[in-house]
Length: 153
Image (cartoon, rainbow, N blue to C red; front, top):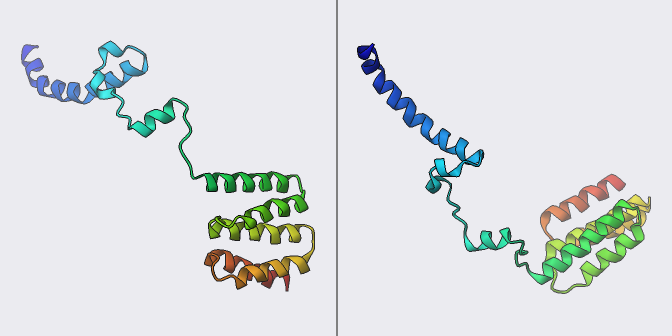
């Protein structure tokens, strides 16, 4: 028996080494932390992560925050099928001079889409053509407008 244990000892050492971290994690999950190695589970939070854990909001650009709020309101109005109100919210985005162009082009697309939702293809086409003509807008939005004009024809 002793000879058999001596032969198994290297295998037991390997198994023990492999299973020790698993045992420590199991102890930590079960709430038995004193048995676990606390160094394995020490939180390594950065200051920003620690602040977020306390419930603080991350700092954002106030312009983008306002734009996100406007577009969120437009999305809620869209869901309620209040398309004239969607256009009013999107017009506010277009009126903001400091709004990044991708916000403006997105709002412009929503205006055109709202006309399509009301089956007003003439007004929608006019808006899509304005989007296509504005070379400052992102190419992806100009391309989408071009494709929508082709669908209207």
